[in-house]
Image (tube, rainbow, N blue to C red; front, side):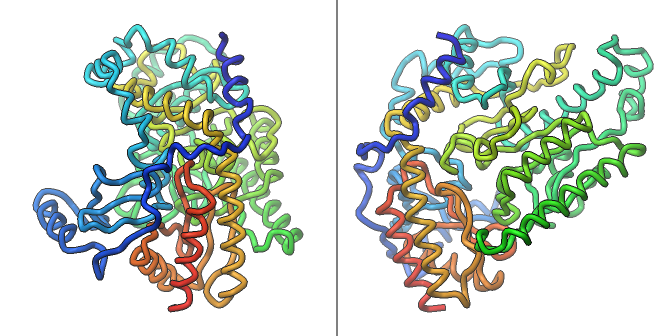
Length: 486
């Protein structure tokens, strides 16, 4: 079967709701908090031990992953939390899914795990088939090549390099590399090291490696003291809610930002031409800022008109939590983006593209691992479960309950909450200020709900794909109890 036919087969019936509950059968009935504070005493002791060898300033508590199950994460103090944050949106099927626990019971799969190859030079005999049957099975329509990586940052970093190489190949007409280019790149000057840029947006997060960090603008703590390239940064639309009551305002916001993109491309044309634009379908770390399908279609049109690449960063949005496997599917684009990066729920990293973004010479996009066949085996099973249990349909049903419930809480507590937004279960709501937001997140944890913040004032919801309607109701009930105490 061809990868295209297999792709159609995977998507067919994906959105029909299943009555199966295999993925949540062994869960507790509800959250349970045993300690007066989180972290509890055992987590605090473990933190002291870890602090002797590693920075611990970001640690919230220590988990008991042997006990965690489905949508529930257990900590070492016996607290059981309904997890709607899922390791920063990276757990597709919840904890200890029985199908995933069985993946490495197969001896061949176990050997794939322990004999990790340098994929760029010594791939295993199964690798071509796995790329076709697993990763190309979920490829965005119109993109027929893939470069595998390990994480979101390295996926974006290498995608940027692919874009720069593609752009320079166009300029030189695919002519052979010159000796001057070869020599000058070794001392970081043109023409071998050209002055090119990637345009990004205020509020964006694309990773923490040097190139990706240059395009990250969500929090100063990510960037402080680290040199960055002089690359253009455009404003991203900041909408007023409800969307239906602010159509004209939000349309003007789109127009303003798109005009700014075009102006920046012109301004940088002489000193540091824009080779590509990178954008998230929903700015996640930056505050769950969303833009309209019209905005993304216009952005794509600008890229096509200017001869630059459009990279859509689906590291956090990819994998089904917006109700479609790829969030950009909601936008009805005029053809595929040039590049789509992924990681998190897909277990490994990488980017989809077409032939144009494959360098003519070997070793230009390369590292030791170039992905991980063991993670592809896990992804293979994840995709089977998504299809068999029709989890994208489940996301839309559960997401509708959660979103309508958040809107109800917003109406009940308008002095605390506003601007509920998102797609599927990929949702967020704003609080009146940062202090209140952080207070609510802490209180929710003590009520048995693990969530997270984003931007300055937002609470984000990132449940697993197996999050059901009744889980949404538990979250909403406990959220309401917290709000009554604020």
